[in-house]
Length: 237
Image (cartoon, rainbow, N blue to C red; front, side, top):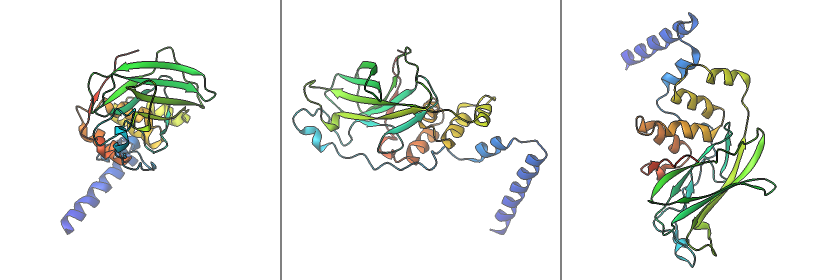
């Protein structure tokens, strides 16, 4: 034990000296010392509720999980710095042949409506906002995703919605992001700023090569039930 503590003190002292001497940037020390990315101070989600209601008239969802957006809290409020953010949603086993995605302004004006074919289920899909959309900074938008089995009846097990806000970052954060960083480093910076949607998009690019990062990010916001679900990319719009 004594030897291990002594070794740790020596390692920390070496790091501090290297930083003071200017050999190692502070951000590099912080990121390289982290085992896996987390979304700090997130309001933890409750576990997704059972889809028992899905068997009622109009329901078309089977299995133990409902349609579930990948968001850090139960109110599904998310932040982005992108003008055209990606959305991620878990599609449970379902009879639905397509999902409907709607993005609208707070005043109710529809901006983007898409019908997305469902070719497989029990997986996470990504939804790309139309390239004609250009979200404005400091403005909130409402989004909805529905599984369509019976267009005349949609219940809560087939439907999910939330709000997204495009935010701006402080100049020093933008300066850090403009340096030569990899996706994991950028994701950690954005996570620390509370920008969920872009953090998730960056970590999604690492799911195959660094699956631990994806798993730790989802776990940090209570999405443990989705750790083993496949992630598929949607086509560009």
